[in-house]
Image (tube, rainbow, N blue to C red; front, side):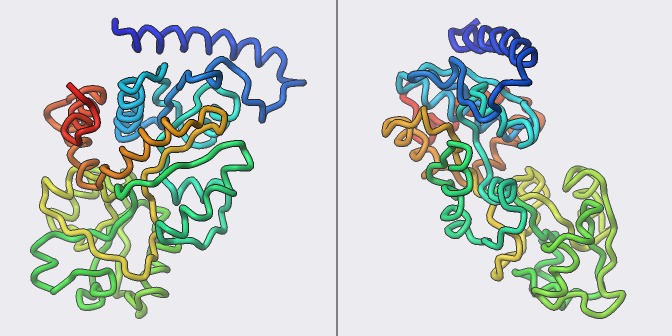
Length: 315
């Protein structure tokens, strides 16, 4: 067992004990308290959401910081923001890779910012209310996208979402909520003038949120357009085309470090900002393919090799 693995195991044990104590005193506990050993000194506890991409990003942060002398442990696969934000508040973790648009939406459901610059500008005040802060965001984005096959794009001269008007009528596959979302069917109509007339866009719901069933429906021609996330390995493996969104109908979802203010140092910011400066959407696709594809590489291995290739980890 590596030193960091031992620390992670010990941290998990201590957290289990501290959680029991906290529950016993929950009637008087301050939910905004940043208490706990995780937030003291240079001790960094990196968390992640409960999906592979987030764990990979968590490993990238953890390994880069450990290489620079920080005391690092990890607590991955925590769950959604309803769990990760409280974990940041109570000190169970103090750093997590986030997505700027969805993070802003957590604090302001009516937010109107859409570009990376505008979303990033709104975040410091939003997260500051919880004594949290963000650093530089990466070019890398994991967000909804209107996707077509390469053949469909070439045959119909499609490069942007608005070009789908030339494809009408067509079928579109996505999760069931897409029929009502502002960047879904209503957005197609109101922002891009696609599907204005009844029957021009047939919505076909799939429950796998851009997963294998949605991809298969697009590739085999069951549908002509699909909502697939921009970091899906299928974008490369199936030679798919992500249509541009010049009106920024779909909010930015750039990877961004979210941390407790009490662990901030210039050195920590330098390490994490260097990662953001290098990380691209294509990198995320490749990392996910390594971990989720046939290779089945561990998140730790994929992270280590990306950091090395990017020149951020000396060997």
